[in-house]
Image (cartoon, rainbow over all chains, first blue to last red; front, side, top):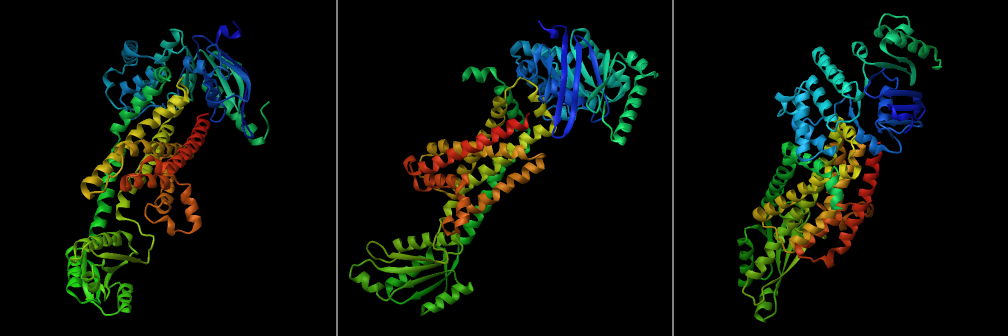
Length: 256
Length: 366
């Protein structure tokens, strides 16, 4: 077993270039099993590109990434079997009901017959979807859509779960419940990598990474990061980093 | 193959597609509603145009036999005798002014021929600028020729279609409608269904699952092949019941040879989906494909009468070949031997578009 034995996500020198734009540069990052890992940064800092490389949606220009023990480039299919992915758009079929959505994704992930039906019952119960099973996904409110999308992403009990801004446009109560569920999964051994713009959510992560202009510029627990910058909380750190970012942009300088 | 089908994401994809299709009004509307509306439109046009065609009579024979022929013509109900004239220039003048659209010319030796036991001749001149109307007129005149005049072997009616020598039969429209509606429906529905998945983010969601791209694509487009066959059946049934279109040849052969056309249309839909970003764009692009299909395939206007460049464009349209197959089988009862070149052209086209579309589609999925 390699270095990846202990890590659920192991990225080394990851780089992604779109034409003349460098979206991600020299990203080296390790996420342990069962960790809730937050990826923060302003829009356009490279968070989504990073997640998309981890999921095999984008091929890295250079560098390697091992996810759940598999190389994302050489062993894409094994990676896809081992991960759950929830995008900002949720990826639900509006004209299918809640249970039809879960059943469809379960089957795509290779579940069949009794095992599948059992898993559906389990997911519906875990995510409090009981009263909504027959409702069309298109008629659900944001919070319920988010939970349904999570159910679909977790159908095959993936060891690694990627959440790309999962709580955008969701009310506070639903967000709190969502994070309880996330931590429930994590304590059961699932590794979770999440991007968010909400700093109260960032504070609930085990560890954080800040990205700016494609670079990783800070890494550590929420406490470590705030101390490192001598600031009161994660939100201040985020704002400070964004301010520096804009200054560099204004002076036309490059990120060191 | 079977084990691949069982283990892959093909079946869940197929199943999901059928559930969605059942709930989508657009699919039902295009599958059943569109043929009904189009047939009603064209059927109405066919029926009204051929009734009471204003007709001129120029009877140079002035015999009992010639008067019997004129009566027979009038009795078909297709011709209203609006004038009797003495010379040909009057005929031309009236048709050009639009006062008449057909003329019957009975030559002086008409009666003589009958008496001598020769087959008598008469001429029907038709303003064929409107091929629909003129074809029906010609059919009616031929019928009158067979039944009218007490000549043995009937009257030899010589048809002179003016202004449009490359005349096409009215029955060509309904079989043509099968091909036209199939390609409209399949390109629109397939492209919109795929673009919808991209818009909603479900396509991206599917790409991060273990489903392979072949299963994804096949599961997505195969249900629409069934939509195509249902629509085709609806048109043929309505065409037969309402307008009595002939079904001369083997329907089984027609259904088999329709497969490459249907698959080709699905592939075009897939192609459109790789260009269009939104469903509205997919709709517009699909109709961009429709215009040359309607105008240049021979669906409405005979290709023989087109300038060479228009004919060349027609040669790369799958509908051009499919129309020949449709009309060949339905109207002439053609067997496979007579239409294999068109079938081959369709298969080649389908393979080319399918390869191109699948490659483009795979690229857009990352």
